[in-house]
Image (cartoon, rainbow, N blue to C red):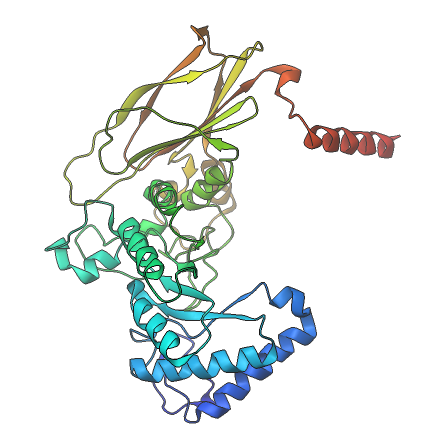
Length: 418
């Protein structure tokens, strides 16, 4: 809340974000409307009509000193101000921590005739420990808290007065308690180390069908809520370190982004909690992602070993490319620790971390037996494995418009070089 509009002086975070309601809600409405008109003038209606305007942030915890009814008032004024600029602008909430207040906001808007274009809320794996200290009394199976909550909200929306609302989860990450059980919302290595990658794959795949957005918080460790980080790794939420080194979490999203095409049916035995496998087909290419999420509180987790059998009916011989996120290859946090966790990196240390930030990779030329390719795998807890089976040589080139685009690009480069 801008200080000039605030009703109090309560602040949070290093940069002293004021968390009190406005002293005059009409003034707040003028601010929101002026901001929206500025966006309209600068970017145009067709652009900003694609945006999602959230009202506040986590008003159900210490980010808001007002009551729930005070938040309804803030939301109502904000929604009216945005819609006055253009009915096409999208507004939503409650932007709550731990998926709270969602049915209540829908009920409030339905009964008051207030616009509500989408639901926005937040969830973290560590929230389970907030709701159920030491997990005592938790009804959720190991690792299932986040997917369960996403499904609960989807069902609540579908049963509500506005069953077709989009559901935007605009904060989540891999945070879990420290090894001693302490809940830590900063300086927490679970967002830095190799285990974050498997957590991301496990949760992102699990919720894919139950929401419209599942947005990681956040892109970079250049992030000042509790003061700027002072070392390369600081338990901050980014996919990239302070100086831009990719973390294991970054590579997990890289792997997920490659899962294009049609999802294949996968047959396997019942998998223990935290283990997952998904396979996609795009033309002749087969893409497979496996992960082994390290889950606290379930005892010793052994490596996952098995054999993948992949159908291959193409006449061309296949090549199998494998990439792995593991400590020291795709996750340089563990290397940084072994160097003594230096606050300031020497050039040679930076070079070493850059090398260890790259996933391990290798390729195979598998044999085809009875129309299948077999591949042995072994994944330790916390690791992620990406496999791509495709034809060798010219047969590997994509068909359709992409082949034509590539040919045109290569021809343009050849012409420039003359």
